[in-house]
Length: 260
Image (cartoon, rainbow, N blue to C red):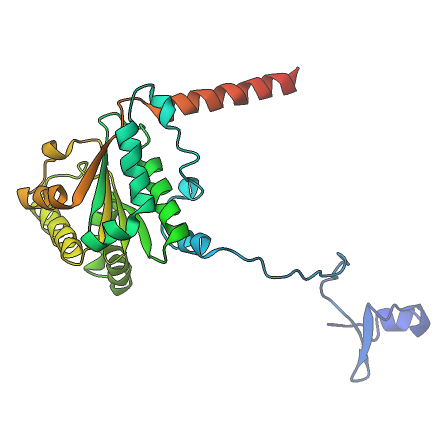
């Protein structure tokens, strides 16, 4: 506050001064300096927005944001233009008979040599469908991210705790296996995690651009994947690129119409 006695106070009569601007403090006429809060209306309270248990589980799953609403109604099997009824049946059984998969510790190996063929979308759609039906912990992580988290966990206790939560998930999506650099420590860490999950009958979905037989990993790792995973082969069709072309075309049509 600024002392105005002998200055503003001498020049203005008290009645001319706004009570919002000046105040008498210890016999001194002082100017109040601060912020004026504008009236933006009344605060309205709303009832708590309820979310389903499945939505809550999704929010903690580490599934990428763009796949959080993925489900099997959005996965279009017919875009591949070939007969993949058996692969579709396998995928649907994972949802409807998940408890049997869980009891036996069986998972999925979703592969296609073509990038962008729908592997990650399918894995997330399956996980989301299961979370709507089952009270389980799901985690999603790519192999490069897993290895980076593993390295950081050596020096960071918080990262170690995060890593253990990923490794211990009831259903783990391990995305892009087969892209990692071949190193002894990588094989050691992957084998330890996959072997522990197999022994605990934890369910794992692997996605890969490499056929299971051609994985350049320690033989023990490949053996564990062979033992526990049902293969789902998606046709060699770049669905992501095709969808991107369609979306870009729609966008350009909208922009061009707006501009004319």
